[in-house]
Length: 369
Image (cartoon, rainbow, N blue to C red; front, side, top):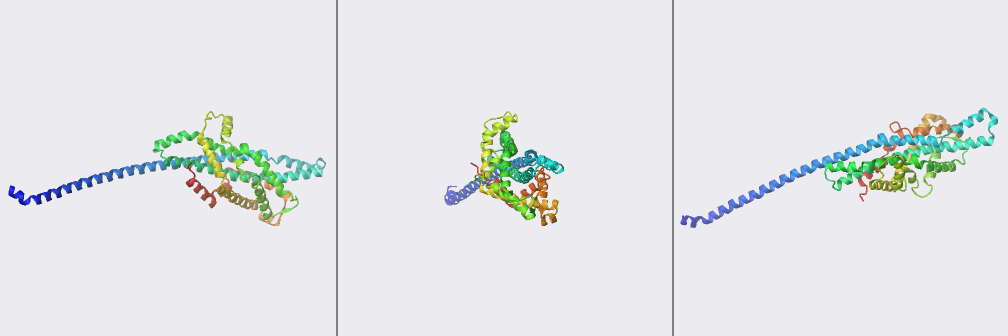
């Protein structure tokens, strides 16, 4: 044996070394394979959890969009329609003119002229206020929806962690979200009187040189509406019109608005305050101002199409006396403020390419600070 060992010990060492190395490599391979398997299971679990979170995010965003489309926007349109009809009621003017026509001695010539001048200004004011309010309210509510959806994404990205925690966060913020969406009524409840006053001033400036006997064709009517909007939008400081849509002090507005509604929860609501601050920043941005300009111009063009259809393109092509046109103009205000499901102007705004791009970028690039 000793002689055998002496002769073959080198081979034995090599064999044992090879077997040991092979065993060690196998153990290393097995450990590596197990780690890869564990990592794959972990990644699969994370992917599954990510899918659950994404599904919850999508469901939450769609729920907010559904609330906006079925509740917030229809309610806001109804409130606006009612308030505009109340604040800009032309019936008393038309009734006095009709009585004066039937009873010539009841109104002097100067009184008739004054009534016609008021009817001229208020008819255009009512139509343009309705056009502006409808456009801005639909854009404002869409900004709200995108900001709420973005907040959900940011909360998830910051590591709320799990599906259960995401649901809990949703429950915590639900009251602030509801109050935030309810703030869309600020225009009809608080901003409308100032909006009407300034729009009336713009209409007076544009219409002061236009006589009741002047013939209005499609081009003149389009230019008149556009000029009123341009004068109004250029009044005061840049983005002054934001003050008609939302309060300057969100906290004070919350205390007043929701205490008047009997809402018992008037806590600090930092989420609500943050949402309002972000909304104000979006509305004051140059990008949103560009969207507003494009939307207003598109709605004016669409309105002119409807006017040509209802009045007959031939009548407007040859020109219609302004006095005869005024009652027709006032009739378009309710059409502009129809409920969203019937309102073709709201659908037109939604389908503008620049508007779609703006809201896509808003949702994707909202600052997280």
